[in-house]
Length: 596
Image (cartoon, rainbow, N blue to C red; front, side, top):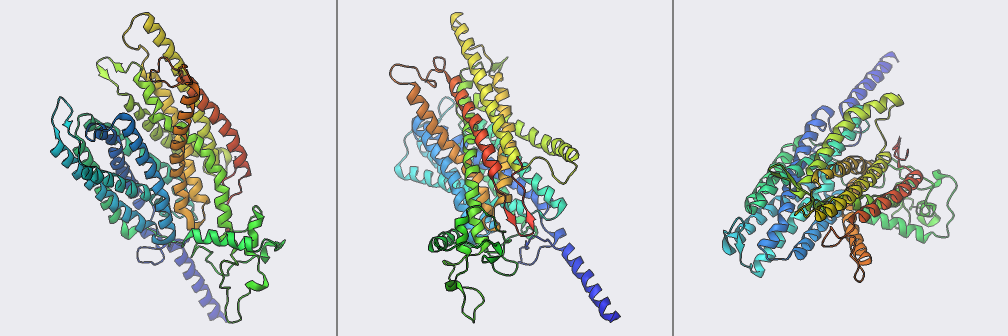
């Protein structure tokens, strides 16, 4: 008896040591074996993925800052046509994120998705560099600072567009996968790694902005000199280095297996619940169907516990006589007639996301003004400082620096301070709290921009009366609105990335990351729609619209205040939605997100 007891004790110690050696979140290494903590994941590969993302963003932004000038000067498009093509290209890039999320969650997994679309991204950049070189070599001759170009052939235009849309596919589809794959390298069940995972999203967003900073300075300078091909080759080189770094980290990455087609699981729940629309839902959740064992409905992911809302969907998990399996089988065959609780909760989770996600679109509308009306406003202001000229487009540098400063300030000072004040396990503000703060700051940024515009119009009137040739109101007065937009991003977009990643079911993590990108895309389209409506309504007949060709005769300040009013309304709607949001209940773990 004593010997048997001792053997059992030794076995328990051995099992405990083995559990401490391996990750507890179900991640595996590149060989498909259970991942070892000290030999995989963590900041060693986390930093590598941050550098990878920074270089990829540099490469993509390097194309974005050059396209407008290339299309007007080389392809002979007018400003409106070129702007429309660039906007469509950017919107398509964001939409491709849903493609990447689908194949990542369903079939390929995060690593394979990242690798394949990065290769497509690099080859697209090489094709663009060669295509641009061919266009400039065959159709352009040097001019006074800018090349004089003859119109290209239809075939050359087709090759050009194929290359830039391959870039859009590669970069857009890669984004949700790399965001989630980076978070996968940290085990949220481990206290130290869980804190690192939260910090990773902040540093990931900062890496994005630092990549943009480089492209908006050096590559924008090359664009101004007409050296588009050199700029594109630099982008291709940066993307290639990013790909090489990604491949070198392969032996140390942690992986999660894809969960199968989520659309099928979603449709199965809808069909099963409609089939049983007359069935009474049992009062006890224990009477609903769930498979035994560790895996849930998403091929190895954690089970999701039952929640009472959207009760009509629970009918899909009600077991009827028709659903009982034959005696020689353990589980029912017909997944279109009976679904598990986890499968039903996946659908509920997506439905809960919708109100929160819709509230983020208004924020993205205010964010997109930085690349449009902020720049237009800056072109009418005094943009010289002694002998130095400040291009209005370069004012976004203050937004980028603001993101970097606020990320570090929040992580290094605010989080420790709040942890000491609350004396608990909470690490800083919740995701929804930060998202709400982001909307508040964006409203303040629009008010600041409106006040600046009021003063600009006042100075312009005085300058005209004094017969001054140009405005005396300095462009540096725009700095506060750029800084506030940057600060709002740290709270809204970083919080949004964390929220959707943490709340999404295990089989839909990349889809959660894609929602953050899709919010930016929807905000861009909504902003364009709002601008057209404002111009049409305020510019009826002989009236001068708020946003006219001559901003000195318009009232862009009223447009800014309209955006501030919309953001203010959005704040109250968001608070209501956040209060009603029910967090995801994973088996054995409560994911807190609705403390607002």
